[in-house]
Amino acid sequence: MKDNIVLLCKYYKPKDKYKSSQEKEIAKREFLSCTASYNYVSYVDTGSINNTPSDYTKYVGNNEKSCGAFGKDGLLTDEQKRELREQLRNTQSCIWDMVISFREEFGEMYCRDYEQAYSFIKKELPKFFTRAGLDKDNIIWYAGLHENTENKHIHISFFEKEPKLYKNNNELVFHSGKIPKNVLITSKAIFEKSLTNKTAEIVKTRKDLTDKYEMFSNSITLRKGLKKQLLKLYDMMPKYGRIGYDSENMESVKSYVDVITNNLIRSNRDLQKSFSSFLYELYKLNKWQKENYKHIPDEYNVEIYEKDIMRRLGNKTIQTALEIGHIRDKIESITTYTKRDRYYKKRQRKRQWQYLFDCLEYYHNQEIYEMKNFKQFYNKLERYRKQKAYEM
Image (cartoon, rainbow, N blue to C red; front, side, top):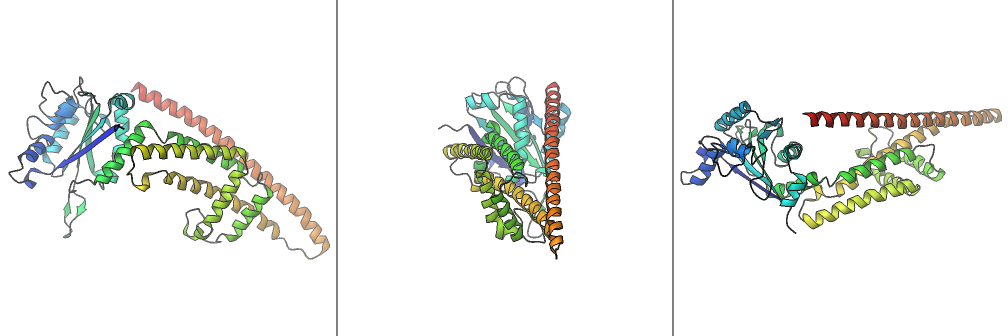
């Protein structure tokens, strides 16, 4: 199967780091750093191969072959390009030259214009810097989408603002430039996931599952058997310290939390259906990844989503156990000595249970109401944001 994305990344050190015999590397560094009359900023700005631009910044931004050179804040102005060239001439950092090339049909579908390219690069490039061991806040980058070949491709160049790494003598130095091969292979898969939005359905089904679990795991609607399990969990939980699914002091009861979570899912058909939909989306992602990227490190496979959903649902299970346990503790705090006291306790317990359950039901309904209102407000805000972005 032909790759949808080809990712290439090279780096070039300052001129004085090369031997005189390394003429090719020196020439490329001069091209990237805008010290020659024909340089990389012009190249990225123009995208033209017929009319040789004076430098690389102009190549990136040619309106006929390129969408124009852009940075983190959008398309670069002439003044910003001049400032960028000056920074490139003066920097002692390595200058990286990266190209993301797309298979013809893939590029036409997922990266056909400036808006898609800018959105993709602005979102994913800072994450790439972090994976590569670079400080994303210490990087200056610019890019351009090119259409001067059959395959659309994005040229990206970046460099460090200042040295941030310490040598053995505590001297600050720039990054060596080398980016590990596994980072590039991993990033290739991540870029394709981002462009095709492979995880969109997973996020959607996860939201549906967590919302339904929130609704059906409240202490009012639970069956008697599940309430007993939750009370047992409450008795097993530590009485001090942070109480959460990933807390260290909860490690001994985490497996029992998972048991209750799975039992609660199986107790409701709607929850079973939502959970099955979520697992199916994970299966599709796993199949796609095995077919296209067999050598991706484990931390980027579907297991991260499986662990994440158990953490989310587990925290709600723990919260429900605490609610039921506190109710029981309040009721049992009344001490009885006589028959009359026991009769009084029975009546009082009944009233307290009913009052507490009424309160829980009220706050549960309020929460659902507020969630609906927030969702409506968020959707309006999102439409307004998209409208604003379109008008710009």
